[in-house]
Amino acid sequence: MGTRVLVRLHGELSAANAVRVRAELLKFAVDRPDALVVDVTELVVRDPRAASVFRAVAWQAATWPGTPLLICTPDAETARRLTHGCRRLLPVFASPEQALTARPPRRVTVLHDTLLPVSGAARRARELATAACARWQLPALVGPACLIADELATNALIHARTMADIRFAVGSHHLMISVRDGSAARPLVAREQPPGSVAGLGLLLVDATADRWGCLPVDGGKVVWACLRTRTLPPG
Image 1 (tube, rainbow, N blue to C red):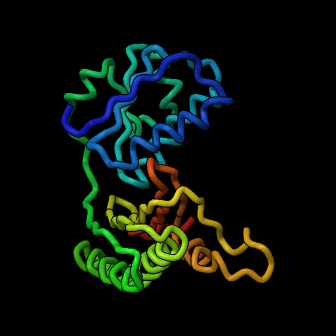
Image 2: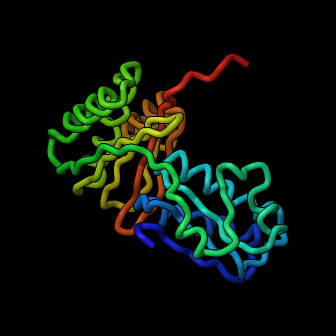
């Protein structure tokens, strides 16, 4: 299997449990295996709204952390429901064996380091952001990447007070920045804080600068991630 992770789903997928399925699949994707293989052979899908959870996971995992999602089902109708309008992002295989032995999907390039919970963590994060943009020839993103890396590292230092793993990854459309720390507490932006509080102001800057950002719970803590677009979208 290499570093591919196989997950088998059973029972009936519904709107009520789709949120949990999404969260659990993304937990597997966070560790960036070569691919996340999801076997839905024994999964019953009757609600088209619930079926969209796989397209949502595939889109999120491709954006960050850059993990390809592969679906396994021998049933053509199930494959059509789960991948409707998203077949390129969500390839389907007839069996787990085919998915596990298929040609490895394209991986994103990664630069990462471990930050100690000390005052120099934010400076180190900015240095890594600058190095990542230089390595991948993204000079226009040096400023935004340094700002985001600084704020995510500072947030981990102040609130988690644990060692943190910082990761930069570049895909075909985005530069992805993430910090994984040892606190499960969800970060709050300033608009979610009581009036007069200065907590969360840094995340307002991240919110204003990043194309997208978010937070995912993981074993032993959380990951806060943000993406910067590497290509300018055409007008209209």
